[in-house]
Image (cartoon, rainbow, N blue to C red; front, side):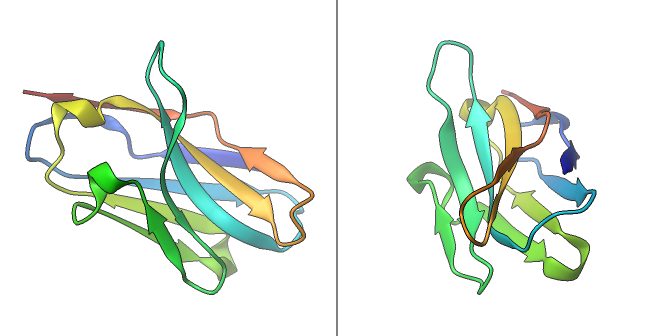
Length: 116
């Protein structure tokens, strides 16, 4: 299984971006889908996740600005990011975990840069 993320880029503060991540290849039923972000020198952090049944979890710093969603038929997860701030600048990585929890898949990351 390979995850391919897209949608990153350079945007001014207050702007918006939409990230997408699709799983290619034969995969088990996916349980949780999520987005993490990584800044050099800092620990990777969970930005948002969505369970198969639709339950969502957000990092406190993005609540009210970011929205995670998924399309199970397409094995795709999205992250709608609004009112972006310079502190949102990071490499965003998508993650998918099998429903049984025994397989974990990561995308290659997509850079999001927010200028002030």
